[in-house]
Image (cartoon, rainbow, N blue to C red; front, side, top):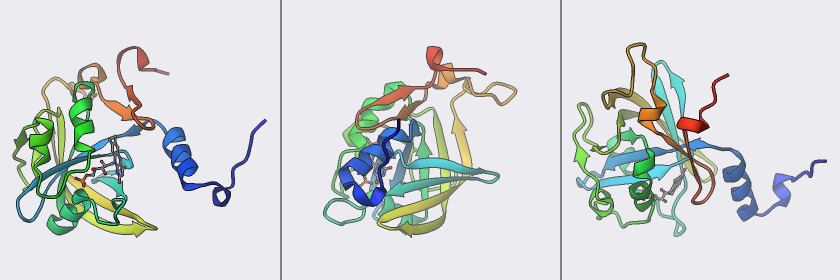
Amino acid sequence: MKRSYHVNQINEDFLYKLVLGLIVPRPIGWISTVSKEGIYNIAPFSFFNAVCDEPPVFIISASDRDDGSMKDTVKNILETKEFAVNLVTEELLLPMKKTGEEFPPHVDEFKEAGLTPSEGLNIKAPLIKESPVNVECKLLDYKKVYDMHILFGEAICFHIENGIIDDKFRVDYNRLRPVGRLVGDLYVKVFGESLIKI
Ligand SMILES: Cc1cc2nc3c(=O)[nH]c(=O)nc-3n(C[C@H](O)[C@H](O)[C@H](O)COP(=O)(O)O)c2cc1C
Protein backbone atom coordinates (compact mmCIF):
# COMPACT_ATOMS: atom_id res chain seq x y z
CA MET A 1 0.00 0.00 0.00
CA LYS A 2 1.26 3.46 -0.83
CA ARG A 3 -0.10 6.81 0.19
CA SER A 4 -0.01 9.59 -2.42
CA TYR A 5 0.97 13.16 -1.67
CA HIS A 6 0.16 15.83 -4.24
CA VAL A 7 2.84 18.48 -4.04
CA ASN A 8 0.28 21.26 -4.28
CA GLN A 9 -1.58 19.84 -1.27
CA ILE A 10 1.26 19.60 1.26
CA ASN A 11 2.91 22.39 3.22
CA GLU A 12 6.47 23.72 2.72
CA ASP A 13 7.83 22.18 5.88
CA PHE A 14 6.65 18.69 4.91
CA LEU A 15 7.91 19.17 1.33
CA TYR A 16 11.34 20.21 2.61
CA LYS A 17 11.45 17.08 4.80
CA LEU A 18 10.33 14.85 1.91
CA VAL A 19 12.93 16.17 -0.53
CA LEU A 20 15.82 16.25 1.94
CA GLY A 21 14.79 13.04 3.70
CA LEU A 22 14.17 10.92 0.62
CA ILE A 23 16.76 12.04 -1.92
CA VAL A 24 19.75 10.66 -0.04
CA PRO A 25 22.62 10.55 0.50
CA ARG A 26 23.59 13.87 -1.07
CA PRO A 27 27.21 14.87 -1.57
CA ILE A 28 28.28 18.02 0.23
CA GLY A 29 29.99 20.76 -1.73
CA TRP A 30 31.95 22.71 0.84
CA ILE A 31 32.35 25.95 -1.04
CA SER A 32 35.07 28.50 -0.38
CA THR A 33 34.96 31.95 -1.97
CA VAL A 34 36.39 35.42 -1.52
CA SER A 35 34.36 38.62 -1.62
CA LYS A 36 35.41 41.49 -3.85
CA GLU A 37 36.56 43.24 -0.65
CA GLY A 38 38.88 40.27 0.05
CA ILE A 39 36.95 38.55 2.88
CA TYR A 40 37.17 34.75 2.83
CA ASN A 41 33.96 32.74 3.11
CA ILE A 42 33.02 29.06 3.45
CA ALA A 43 29.60 27.35 3.40
CA PRO A 44 28.34 23.79 2.87
CA PHE A 45 25.73 22.95 0.22
CA SER A 46 24.05 19.56 -0.16
CA PHE A 47 21.99 20.69 -3.11
CA PHE A 48 25.26 20.03 -4.87
CA ASN A 49 26.43 17.56 -7.48
CA ALA A 50 28.69 16.81 -10.42
CA VAL A 51 26.65 16.97 -13.63
CA CYS A 52 29.31 16.57 -16.37
CA ASP A 53 32.74 14.98 -16.45
CA GLU A 54 34.33 16.31 -19.65
CA PRO A 55 34.84 19.06 -18.83
CA PRO A 56 33.78 18.55 -15.21
CA VAL A 57 30.86 20.74 -14.18
CA PHE A 58 29.36 21.06 -10.70
CA ILE A 59 26.10 22.63 -9.63
CA ILE A 60 25.22 24.34 -6.37
CA SER A 61 21.69 25.37 -5.51
CA ALA A 62 21.30 28.07 -2.86
CA SER A 63 18.28 29.71 -1.31
CA ASP A 64 18.21 33.27 -0.04
CA ARG A 65 18.37 33.89 3.70
CA ASP A 66 15.11 34.15 5.67
CA ASP A 67 15.35 37.97 5.50
CA GLY A 68 15.46 37.76 1.68
CA SER A 69 19.16 38.67 1.36
CA MET A 70 21.54 36.68 -0.83
CA LYS A 71 23.89 34.22 0.89
CA ASP A 72 27.55 35.32 0.86
CA THR A 73 28.54 32.31 -1.28
CA VAL A 74 26.14 33.30 -4.07
CA LYS A 75 27.06 37.00 -3.89
CA ASN A 76 30.80 36.22 -3.97
CA ILE A 77 30.52 33.77 -6.87
CA LEU A 78 28.41 36.16 -8.93
CA GLU A 79 30.90 38.98 -8.27
CA THR A 80 34.20 37.11 -8.67
CA LYS A 81 33.06 34.33 -11.08
CA GLU A 82 35.03 31.69 -9.20
CA PHE A 83 34.93 29.33 -6.23
CA ALA A 84 36.53 26.20 -4.82
CA VAL A 85 34.76 22.93 -3.99
CA ASN A 86 36.29 21.16 -0.99
CA LEU A 87 35.32 17.63 0.05
CA VAL A 88 34.02 16.94 3.56
CA THR A 89 35.42 13.94 5.40
CA GLU A 90 34.38 12.45 8.73
CA GLU A 91 36.92 14.42 10.76
CA LEU A 92 35.82 17.68 9.09
CA LEU A 93 32.11 17.33 9.98
CA LEU A 94 32.22 19.71 12.96
CA PRO A 95 34.09 22.56 11.22
CA MET A 96 31.82 22.00 8.20
CA LYS A 97 28.77 22.41 10.43
CA LYS A 98 30.25 25.60 11.93
CA THR A 99 30.56 27.11 8.44
CA GLY A 100 26.85 26.35 7.87
CA GLU A 101 25.96 28.92 10.53
CA GLU A 102 24.98 32.37 9.36
CA PHE A 103 27.85 34.82 9.79
CA PRO A 104 27.69 38.41 8.58
CA PRO A 105 29.63 39.12 5.33
CA HIS A 106 32.61 40.77 7.11
CA VAL A 107 33.39 37.61 9.13
CA ASP A 108 36.20 35.33 7.91
CA GLU A 109 34.71 31.85 8.29
CA PHE A 110 38.13 30.17 8.15
CA LYS A 111 38.90 31.83 11.49
CA GLU A 112 35.48 30.97 12.95
CA ALA A 113 35.83 27.27 12.07
CA GLY A 114 39.57 26.98 12.86
CA LEU A 115 40.46 26.17 9.25
CA THR A 116 43.46 27.20 7.17
CA PRO A 117 43.17 28.90 3.78
CA SER A 118 45.61 27.85 1.08
CA GLU A 119 46.21 29.39 -2.32
CA GLY A 120 44.86 27.97 -5.53
CA LEU A 121 46.85 28.03 -8.75
CA ASN A 122 44.22 29.65 -10.94
CA ILE A 123 41.68 31.43 -8.75
CA LYS A 124 41.74 34.02 -5.98
CA ALA A 125 39.20 32.08 -3.90
CA PRO A 126 40.95 30.24 -1.05
CA LEU A 127 41.10 26.45 -0.74
CA ILE A 128 40.51 24.67 2.57
CA LYS A 129 43.90 23.18 3.48
CA GLU A 130 42.44 20.58 5.88
CA SER A 131 40.24 19.05 3.14
CA PRO A 132 42.00 16.27 1.18
CA VAL A 133 40.40 17.32 -2.12
CA ASN A 134 40.00 20.86 -3.45
CA VAL A 135 38.71 21.74 -6.90
CA GLU A 136 39.22 25.15 -8.41
CA CYS A 137 36.16 26.21 -10.42
CA LYS A 138 35.16 29.08 -12.69
CA LEU A 139 31.53 30.14 -12.92
CA LEU A 140 30.12 28.71 -16.15
CA ASP A 141 26.46 29.65 -15.90
CA TYR A 142 23.87 30.98 -13.48
CA LYS A 143 20.12 30.45 -13.47
CA LYS A 144 17.27 31.20 -11.15
CA VAL A 145 14.88 28.25 -10.62
CA TYR A 146 11.90 29.68 -8.73
CA ASP A 147 13.57 31.18 -5.64
CA MET A 148 16.80 29.18 -5.84
CA HIS A 149 20.11 30.38 -7.26
CA ILE A 150 21.66 27.65 -9.42
CA LEU A 151 25.38 28.12 -9.98
CA PHE A 152 27.26 26.02 -12.53
CA GLY A 153 31.01 25.80 -12.02
CA GLU A 154 33.52 24.36 -14.45
CA ALA A 155 36.40 22.60 -12.72
CA ILE A 156 39.81 23.71 -13.90
CA CYS A 157 42.17 22.13 -11.38
CA PHE A 158 41.92 19.28 -8.83
CA HIS A 159 44.24 19.15 -5.80
CA ILE A 160 44.25 15.68 -4.20
CA GLU A 161 46.13 14.47 -1.13
CA ASN A 162 48.73 11.81 -1.95
CA GLY A 163 47.59 8.22 -1.43
CA ILE A 164 43.91 8.80 -2.22
CA ILE A 165 44.17 7.95 -5.93
CA ASP A 166 46.01 4.80 -7.03
CA ASP A 167 48.00 4.37 -10.25
CA LYS A 168 44.84 3.17 -12.06
CA PHE A 169 43.05 6.42 -11.07
CA ARG A 170 40.83 4.60 -8.56
CA VAL A 171 39.79 6.39 -5.39
CA ASP A 172 40.62 4.65 -2.11
CA TYR A 173 37.47 5.43 -0.08
CA ASN A 174 39.00 4.08 3.09
CA ARG A 175 41.58 6.84 2.81
CA LEU A 176 39.29 9.57 1.48
CA ARG A 177 36.56 8.77 4.04
CA PRO A 178 33.91 11.00 2.43
CA VAL A 179 30.54 11.70 4.04
CA GLY A 180 27.13 12.37 2.56
CA ARG A 181 24.18 14.22 3.99
CA LEU A 182 20.77 12.86 4.89
CA VAL A 183 18.35 15.31 6.52
CA GLY A 184 18.94 17.67 9.47
CA ASP A 185 22.02 16.62 11.44
CA LEU A 186 22.22 13.12 9.92
CA TYR A 187 25.22 12.17 7.78
CA VAL A 188 26.53 8.90 6.31
CA LYS A 189 30.01 7.47 5.93
CA VAL A 190 31.06 6.07 2.57
CA PHE A 191 33.83 3.64 3.52
CA GLY A 192 34.60 0.44 5.41
CA GLU A 193 31.60 -1.78 6.20
CA SER A 194 29.22 0.59 4.44
CA LEU A 195 30.81 0.03 1.00
CA ILE A 196 28.88 -2.40 -1.23
CA LYS A 197 30.48 -3.95 -4.32
CA ILE A 198 28.20 -5.69 -6.85
C1 LIG B 1 25.30 20.04 5.45
C2 LIG B 1 24.64 21.33 5.03
C3 LIG B 1 24.14 21.44 3.76
C4 LIG B 1 23.54 22.64 3.33
N1 LIG B 1 23.04 22.71 2.06
C5 LIG B 1 22.52 23.87 1.61
C6 LIG B 1 22.05 23.98 0.27
O1 LIG B 1 22.14 23.04 -0.52
N2 LIG B 1 21.52 25.18 -0.12
C7 LIG B 1 21.45 26.24 0.72
O2 LIG B 1 20.98 27.31 0.30
N3 LIG B 1 21.91 26.17 2.00
C8 LIG B 1 22.43 25.02 2.45
N4 LIG B 1 22.90 24.94 3.74
C9 LIG B 1 22.87 26.13 4.59
C10 LIG B 1 24.05 27.07 4.28
O3 LIG B 1 25.29 26.41 4.43
C11 LIG B 1 23.97 28.28 5.23
O4 LIG B 1 22.83 29.05 4.88
C12 LIG B 1 25.21 29.15 5.25
O5 LIG B 1 25.13 30.01 6.37
C13 LIG B 1 25.38 30.00 4.02
O6 LIG B 1 26.57 30.75 4.23
P1 LIG B 1 27.03 32.00 3.39
O7 LIG B 1 26.06 33.13 3.64
O8 LIG B 1 28.39 32.25 3.96
O9 LIG B 1 27.06 31.58 1.94
C14 LIG B 1 23.46 23.74 4.21
C15 LIG B 1 23.97 23.62 5.53
C16 LIG B 1 24.56 22.42 5.92
C17 LIG B 1 25.11 22.31 7.33
